[in-house]
Image 1: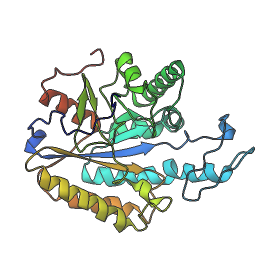
Image 2 (image 1 turned 45 degrees about the vertical axis):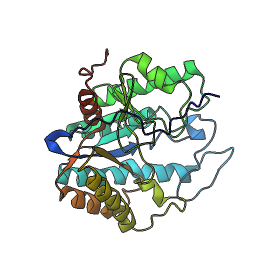
Image 3 (image 1 turned 180 degrees about the vertical axis):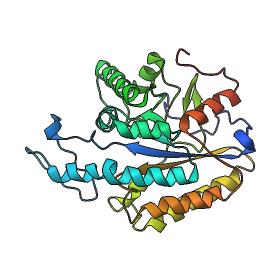
Length: 299
């Protein structure tokens, strides 16, 4: 049979430098999902049950779970925003459409600070098995919500976990997406035709504070991310590398965890050879380095 999966190290790996001669591109991603989680109170088919305490409430609204998610916009985002602003670090907000429609001030503040607002689906849900026409509508609805809140349409997309078989083709057909982050298979961007794929990571990610994922103290997060940074920075002396750091306002934004982000950033910013950039900036640079013309939404 024909193997549709790609394990070979055969992708073109251009001998490039990131801006300023850097070898390592660092992408800080702040996931904005709060308000997009499943809730019977919002007319969804079920309640969300993935949190620090895993508990499923059936046939009734779940004010406890809703309250957990409300912490992110109220208390977590201001902490993360301040940490990034104090250090002048640009980030990409990976925003669910329904979440940003409920918290439009987050998009406005992010744009004011120089961050990118990318798309993370309408609800915080997987797209695997989703009907093609329904998924096209979901993508359009997400774009409309982010455009209204941020002032410009998103150029990046990242489905929560599993995509459908047609997610990427729908993004190309719409014509407004420069890149997606629905891959976890490399330390470099790669091209699918003219479309840029920016791999994401679940290990250098504050989600590991949840469900016995390995992080307990703030220092667990910073030590792990620093180890990844140091290794990739060393390798980038010979070939380009990219590091994604995943954050959530309801997770790293907690008082006992925010220091982990501060410690990582202070370490990384103290080294030469790293370029902190939004994901759209990384995707644009990669296209140019690969000899493709400057991207525009009509491309």
